[in-house]
Length: 154
Image (cartoon, rainbow, N blue to C red; front, side):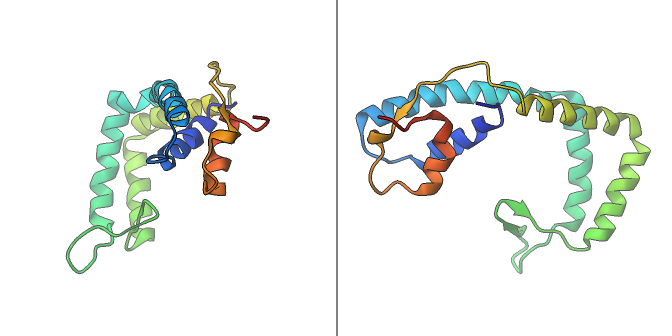
């Protein structure tokens, strides 16, 4: 399994919340305990001063351009915020990146290293969930997300 698949497993496990079955629940708990710290390790760069500073600078710009509904709430579709005047926003972000070039160069390097880590093989092996433990009404999307930790022969 590649490190990037940890995120799929995490989402798949969340989608199984409320599913009956002690054995399945125990395997879910074990997988959660294994997956969460690995993802946390992959995302350690987000705790750095550089990342926090650049995030704060980008958020200042974004606040000006968030699309808001009639009640003033930020409009989000599929967990993605929508913006007004995106071209103007992009220009302001480009100007910010130029003015703080050194800082944003370091951020870009962190992202490149993160992407490289995602493509590496995960060093941890995980318990497999026997296919037979899944309820009959389990959605295909959940099976697809968890495929790397499913024992399809059982």
